[in-house]
Length: 219
Image (tube, rainbow, N blue to C red; front, side, top):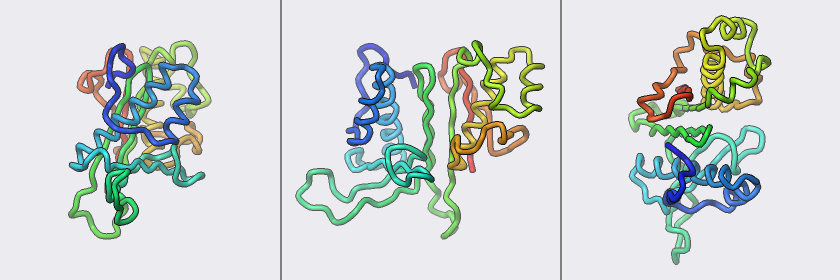
């Protein structure tokens, strides 16, 4: 989805205090709005998937290092009462939803999946990760340190090295997001070649303009 278009309204929903603090800390007004817009859009997507009242949907981000907060893997819960209601029967109910989001070059890529009800009790819930990159960001300099020796050779031999570097990068990022590791794992140590958990996404099918690459990982 495009972000920050002139005259466009923000998606429905209300930011959490933590999200507002993070947005305020982004000095570039356009990027600050894009952050808010993407966060709210992901919330709208999840609410639509589960058929929930958007007012009851509570974002629950979790970082392996910091625990629950405003960053890390996105999760969601359902409040038992609309905020401000006269009564509340208890804390939010966690939703069986895997979600991921990526922003680049004024665009956002969103993904969400609901855990099937027939999934075995005690089974590890599915996890997904998406990543989006603008090839132009790799034309000035390719981050060689992010790639293994074999990947660097692949990039060098490619017809369009920046595009291949961007493609390899989004595959790594998507997989690391799905694994819940993020950049705590050095990207050069992660190879996605032949990994069936990761797939390149069709830019045109996603409605992305030329010059973008995207990937999806499902665990």
